[in-house]
Length: 235
Image (cartoon, rainbow, N blue to C red; front, side):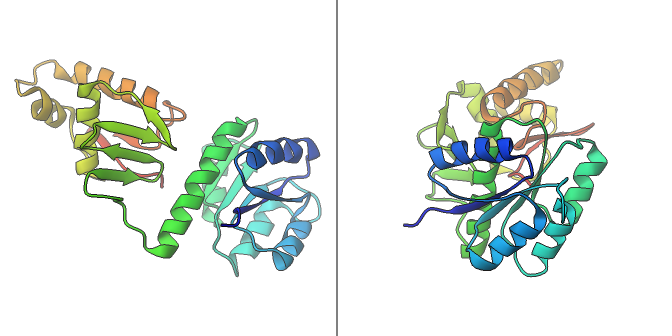
């Protein structure tokens, strides 16, 4: 099986060389470009599975390059930029990027995001199931084995307490549905809610600390303000 190919596009050679080390260590094949025109030329000559594209570059910037790429190709694109406001991120995603990562960034997080995008891309293009067997609930990198009471994220085993596991399983079995703190508490504690909201919040925080790359910006256990929580794969 040939390795997946990632095209790194950034005019900062130090960043490209650094990412080259991290992705090669994960077994990926790397191609490099230092401006948008060079990236487009590379795409005409090579098969690429994912592109990591900087926004600010000479000759052809990342925004224009992304729009050009989207005219013909649908592989995942992750944008990099020193512009980190919500509006910048929305603008990047609106032109066809699949993810937006602000500089400076943690290379390990970028690798994890790339893996997630590649998994989603291959699953959507093969029609793969969201369950590998009847005991597993799968949300991109997150796998919940209800028979073994085991959880893994990106192949890393996560140790949850029985109560934490029960909350995560409850949310998983109601994928995309918002459950209030009272619903969660009544389902799992089987007693009057009273001040149970604080108890649920503490458990949710602990779950996020264990399964999320950045607990302050959760990808899986989402807060729906004023209502409750839901579990979903990354959007």
